[in-house]
Image 1 (cartoon, helix red, strand yellow):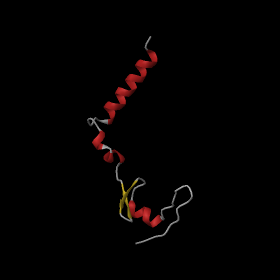
Image 2: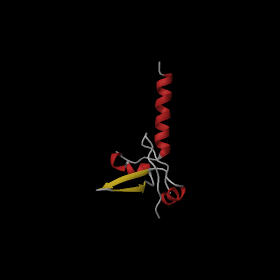
Image 3: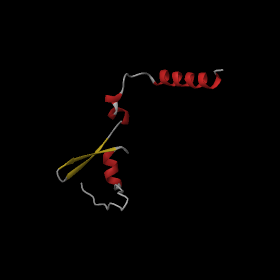
Image 4: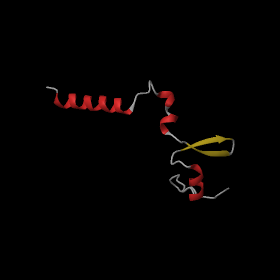
Length: 77
């Protein structure tokens, strides 16, 4: 499958619907090899940032710690 698009003066391009369906993601990665540019879907942004994570914690644990900190900051005298 191939499609053609035009890059605007602001560097934007509309990806045709059929290509977006194939990608299956609204986050993409560009890979350049010589004059070839590959457009690859990123299925999980969190997955692409896993190398920067210190440890994995359950969402509920992070949420509770954040709310605890907010409450402490707001009501500390």
